[in-house]
Length: 299
Image 1: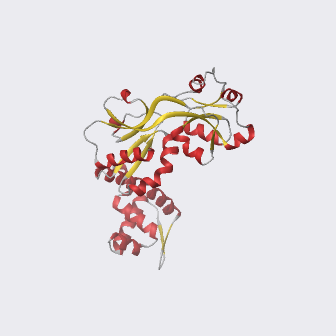
Image 2 (image 1 turned 180 degrees about the vertical axis):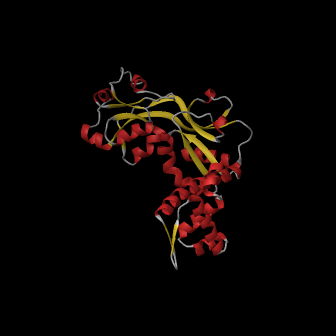
Image 3 (image 1 turned 135 degrees about the horizontal axis):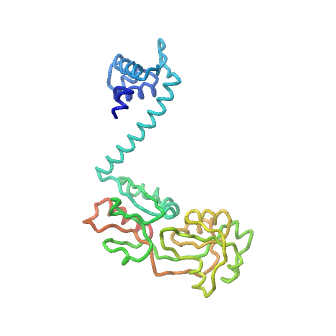
């Protein structure tokens, strides 16, 4: 901070410069800032002296940014926007107007995004923050209100868990893949197709071997391996092969024809997906509203 003050003198002068540079008018900047026009001119002259370079070209009726001034305005605008966003986040946190939901990228992409406008319409006063991660975050340590997790509630002592969906797993392919390669006549015919495997690095997840074993079939053939389920589904929709489809994530894509189910067989693991909350006192009204909304939307 000492070095910054040595370079620019007053931080107030930077704010005056940003306003004048954005409006290209000392008079308009003075009006917006509640200052006099000479005060704006004096602040900018001081900043130019500190920097050792002119920031504006002064004309009789208008001012223009110099090349140096334009470059400085770009950087100042970026810096102030970061500060503003941070201040807005702090203000929202202090007023308890926001609720953070931790979830996988796949849940955020395929379950939450299609419902986001409905959420805004039905809970307009809540600022929802979706925090995605490739692992289940420690929401108590991170200060996160809610998280979506797959598994069984007994694995999460000290957490409340409200069920969103049973874990039901189909086999899916993209419409273009089915058009090119046909639909298998039975489960065994799947083995002749191109497999896409999910290799979860941090979460436990059912595999092709589990699904085929539930049909009485042996190990799956090798194929494309991807460690992010959102990318698995993207590859499937692009016609790259067949993959396991977690029904609560793929149901809408099947309904709209972007994905096609290839078998009537569905693996039900007995696990489910839940919205969880650390049992540290009673939830705020907003956290309760978001949790209840998620459960109702899933139903």
